[in-house]
Length: 452
Ligand SMILES: Nc1ncnc2c1ncn2[C@@H]1O[C@H](COP(=O)(O)OP(=O)(O)OP(=O)(O)O)[C@@H](O)[C@H]1O
Ligand SMILES: [Mg+2]
Image 1 (cartoon, rainbow, N blue to C red):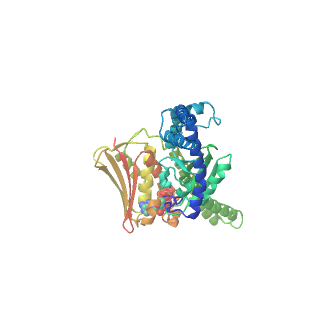
Image 2 (image 1 turned 135 degrees about the vertical axis):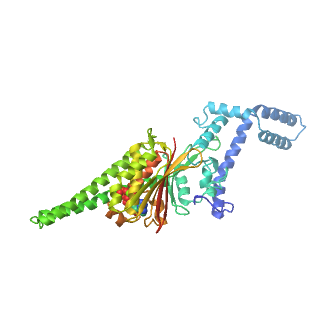
Image 3 (image 1 turned 30 degrees about the vertical axis):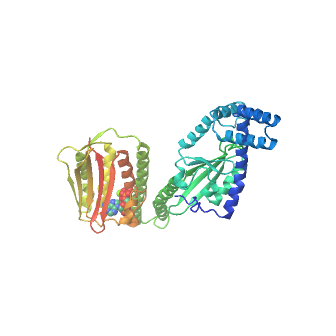
């Protein structure tokens, strides 16, 4: 529930009572005008007959003027209180005749605008010119659980910024937009647009004010993520670039005539340049996958064959870390719909991580399992017996540039984009990625796809 809502609306203080009374005055005035209009439109004939009868009684001396007037008023009151089928026709006719520039709404039109409010995809509420709630859609209840029709809006929300904006909107030509912030239980920003619909309202059945609410929290988060991404990417590029420039200066200056130093520096420079190339390749790969995320892959891939191929490509790395990489295929072909190159990237990234962050001289298993249930699914679990990952890192591992251990990742040439790419590819294949890890025992990264 948004903190905009008035939690003690059933017990308004003195100021609110005064405000409500002030706002209620024009309302009674409008009711009286409506009653008189009924008498001279839909009840015109009956009013005339009553008038003639009471006049005749007075003229013939059968009834005193005072009594006749009293009786006439009582009959008129009864006529106003009794609904008549002619009412809707009369209001329609009045609206057709022009009235106040077409601002009068027929009952059908009233239903129309209410239906529009109900259909709006965002929380929306309408007020009459006295500040009373006329209509609202169901989405409003999330923001204001105690909202009721015909209740002053000042009882529904006591947010001073919102109330002040509504007052301003009543006199403004343009819509008024205000941002409301909530800190607890979650940080949220709600953008509120208050639009004046018509100046003379209530009596004609049209709202005076339309208030719509838009939760901007998710948009803000995306903007923040984009800014962070650019900051991270430039930071990752700046570090090797600064080191390259430093070595170039050293080679141009003090180490100009030192062949041993030149040899050493040039090899470091080559590794820094390779790091930058890797980063750019990963960034491009990420953006390519992001662009295709809504296009389902059309190829057919056998995960048995793919796992064997990936293990083979990583054999030299496994040898370098004295680790073993073992594949446990399914007894029958494990066919899924997919893009072979992308699925190679997924298994390669996961198996490479297992070798990189696993134990030296350890073991990496790639195990395929047919999951029970329908539709039939195949999971590929990549398990290492390394140091594992602390639980607080697990939910964030697939964020771009997120590393559980920044120093180790950099030292091993990691860019922190591998798992972000994996997640995007798995999403494109409508698959699942699960991460489980125990500190001191190892980690298992599992990808699951529908079997063909
Ligand atoms: N099997 C694993 N064991 C322990 N930590 C892991 C494992 N896999 C991933 N991590 C942690 O998750 C982080 C993110 O992994 P990710 O693959 O996204 O990036 P990276 O390996 O650092 O860089 P890149 O994959 O782009 O070369 C790693 O930096 C590491 O801290
Ligand atoms: Mg990686």
